[in-house]
Image (cartoon, rainbow, N blue to C red):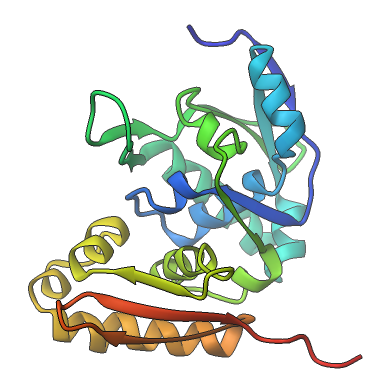
Length: 240
């Protein structure tokens, strides 16, 4: 049963994303991905988890002023982007791959409702209640990264790769395969059909961009069985 009560969360700068969401299959344009970030950064994990246990469904507020602040665009561009992002999020679905239960994969719409507040330059979003657990951190495993770091990236597929790599900063190693990358990141047919093209046109340029624009230092190599082994390191912060 869908919880009836609602609660709006305050904002914070860090993004905490459940690993289930990081590993889900979806495509969102950049504006919608940024709107999703502005929601994720509002999810206080302990508070959200307690509220979910008490049948409180959180609402998320996305404002044009926040979009301007975090993504360094004009108010006019931000207003257009937020509207487009909310629309795209409302029209899109996300596919999860449960490790337990009856289903091998489950596809759900992101939103149940999106309302633009009259004259305030902000939207109030209510996510599908079956998606909410993957947003507010009820999972025991999640990845934390800075909005300012991922905000330096302007390609959605590069962003998805960065989020995946962030899961493995502590271990320093991630092994995956061509099929997984193509499925989860919804890569085009030409890259699905040709691993060499996928490496040349997506993987290698994406890693260069991540190394240039974020705190991660990433390299990869192909294993004998054809899978990819990624090495992931956090670069030390520059001396003050």
